[in-house]
Image (tube, rainbow, N blue to C red; front, side, top):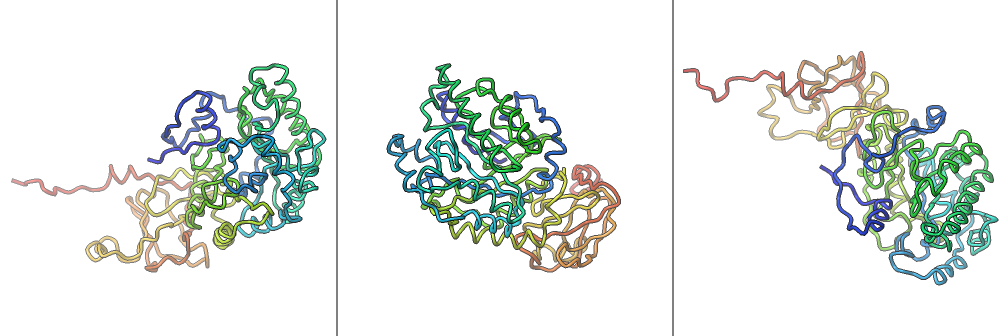
Amino acid sequence: MLTRRTSRRDYLKLMAAGMAAAPVSIAQDAEKAQAATAITAPPRHEQRIQWWQQAKFGMFIHWGLYSLIGRHEWAMEVEGIPVRQYELLAKHFTPKPNAARDWARLAKAAGQKYMVMTTKHHEGFCNFNTRLTDYCASKQGPGRDLVREFVEAARAEGLHVGFYYSLMDWHHPDGARCATDEAARQRFVAYTHGLIRELMTNYGKIDILWYDVDWPLTPEQWESQKMNDMVFELQPDIIVNNRNGLPGDFSTPEQEVRAADKGRAWETCMTLNGSWGYHKADDNWKSPKTVVNNLITCAQGGGNYLLNIGPKPDGSVPEESIEILQTVGKWTHQNGAAIYGSERTDFPWHPYAGFTRRGNSIYAHVKNWPGHTPAEQWLSFYQPPSVISFGGFRTKVNSVRMLVGDKPLAFTQDDLSLRITGLSAIAPDQPATVIAIECDGEPVMDRDSVRKNRPRFNVGVSNS
C-alpha cells in the first residue's frame, strides 16, 4: 500500500490546525480532500474538457523570484525572509529573452500536449504585466511580460495554454489579515479577482486555469463562484481545477497517482526531482522509466499527468530535466497510440504490466519484461519459454501484435489466461514495451475467476 505525500494544500491545513503532518492511506477511487464537497462540474463540462482528456500529458512550469535563490519555491516562508528583503530579488530577475521557446520545444519533444505556467506563485510576484501592482515582471528586472512570451511560445509549438495562479499571497499586505479583517478581505478579494480578470482578458484564448492554495479564506470569502463565473464569461471554453474551493472541472492529486471516482476528471501533478521551483542542490531526479510508468498509470486510471520543470533564473532548463524528457519523448512518439485518447481501464494490478484501452483494444505496457527464468525448465509443460501470461483475461482475443513495428504475435487463450508466446528474452523497447491486444468486445480481466475456478487436485490428501 502506498502512502500519500503531504501536498502544499495539506501542509497549510495542518499548520492552520496546529497539527503535525501524518501519512494518509490512498484509496484508489477516492479524492479524500474533496470528500465533503459534492462533485458537480461547471456547465458544458464534457464539451470543454474533451481535448484535455485526449491529451493525457502536460508540462508544469514553476518559475519566479525563488528561482534566483535556488533553494525551493517555498524559500521565502521556510527561511523566514522578510518581505522588504525578498522584494530586492525582483530587480535582479533578468531572464534571457524568450526562454519559454525552449520550454515549448522541450514539451513537444517529450510528447506533452499542453503547458501550465506559474503566473503568480505564493511569493506574490506577477510574471505578467498588470495595472494592479508594481510587483510584476514588466515593471521590475525583466522589463517585459513573461507570461506573454510563454503564451506565444506554447502556441508556436501547437500546445494548449494553461495559467497557474496562487490565491495565497505572502507579499500583499492583506494576504494574511484578510482572514480576520473584513475590509482587508474585500480589498484582497478585489485585487485577486482583478488579476485573474487581466489574465483572462489580455492573452487571447486560454485553455486551463489552475488555481492553487486557497489559504486563508473559505470559498464563500474568496467569492469563488463569482470568480469562476467571471472566468467562464471571459473564456467560455476554458477548464478550471478544484483548488479555489469549488469542484471545478477536474481534481488535482499532488505528487502521487490517485484516481478519482469514475466519471470524475483528474490530473496528477508531480515534480521531476523533489522541488517545484529551481533547487540547485536537489538531485533526487526521477528516471525516464519512472516518468513513463507514472504516465501509463495515470492513463490507465483515466487521468492526466502534469510533470513539472523548474527553470533556472535565466529561464534555461536544468540539463537533467532535458535529458529525462527527451528520453521520455522517444518513447511517447513511438507508443503514443496507447496513451493519447485512451480510456479508463479497470484492470487489476499486475506485477510487470500496466494497461490502457481504446474501445475493444487493450494495450499491455510491459514495464518489467519477464524474459527467461530458471523455473521455466520445470514449468515448460505448461508455460514454454518466452511467454507473457495474463491470468483472468475473460474477453475473446482476436489478435495480438507489437505496437512498435506492428509485428503479429502468437497467442493461446483458455478459461485461465491469455498467453503470448515466441517473445524475446530481452525487452524489445524501453522503458516499457507495448503489446496491442484486439478483442471482440470490451476487454475484461477478472483474476478472481482464476482463484475460484482453477482446477484443484488432491495434493496432500490421502486416498485411503
